[in-house]
Amino acid sequence: MRVFAALADTDSLSAAARRLGITHATVGRRIARLEEHLGGLLFERVEGRLQLSPLGQRVRQDVVAMQARAEAVLQTAKLENRTSTVVRLSLPRTMADHFLAPNLDGVVGPEVELLLSTDSRIVSIAKDESDIAIRLGRPKDSETIGRRVADIRYRVYAHRDLMTPETACLIDAEAEEDYAEVQWFRRQYPDRPVAFRSGSQIARRGAAEAGLGLALLPSFIVQPGSPLTALPLNGQEPPVREVWLLARQNKLRSPEIRATYDRLAQLFKDRFP
View 1 (spheres, helix red, strand yellow):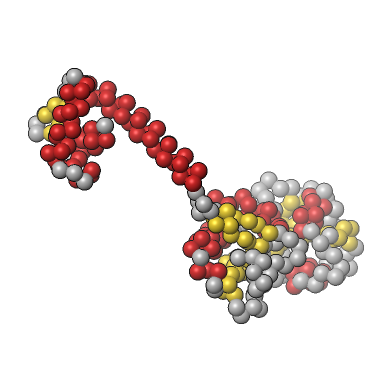
View 2 (tube, rainbow, N blue to C red; view 1 turned 180 degrees about the vertical axis):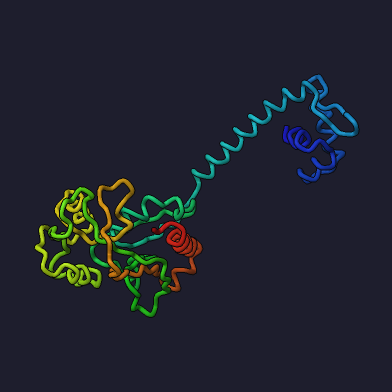
């Protein structure tokens, strides 16, 4: 049947023989044996080419189905016997939930089981607590390989139905937070009262969606269809946060970790807003 399928695809004894790695005489003998077994001709020669006979056309339909089932059996066996390498990736929870998880089709390969760590404690690459890390800000560890893969851009958002954004209260980070973008936000609205504080960007987004006031948010967590709208900046751009992809040199010698590292870099290049 395998020889029959090759000949049906190529219409030539020699072409079928090349595909199968056998001689054209062997192809001819096996087709003759099959025809004898089935009791009819499978091919007819028309203008120097072999074409399927009516019997051959019916047999071909069954052979195509047989091939599909055989491929399914092989695939099942491959999946059953597959071993995968666990690759540990640490990153901020907001980025994991709102960027990476919805785009994992561009990261996870068949040879990898990806384990995400979004612990509030910074997981250490140097102490081998993680294979790859996504960090905000330029790395200081000289032993890591780092690649700047994106910039997080911020805008001031308010509910689109907020009547008086010019005098609205602020939705701020916790008082002790002093990141550059948080300081910028406070300088822009020095005399506004604060209606809500939280160390969670998602909580601040929720408060803004509830109409509590103005919030400085990373643009990538404001999804299409959100009731939030970005306010004009009047030339005063908030500072960006650099996104760095990090790993130790010895970890990147693993083909699976290297492949995951490269896929992550490509993902940020292609899809990060």
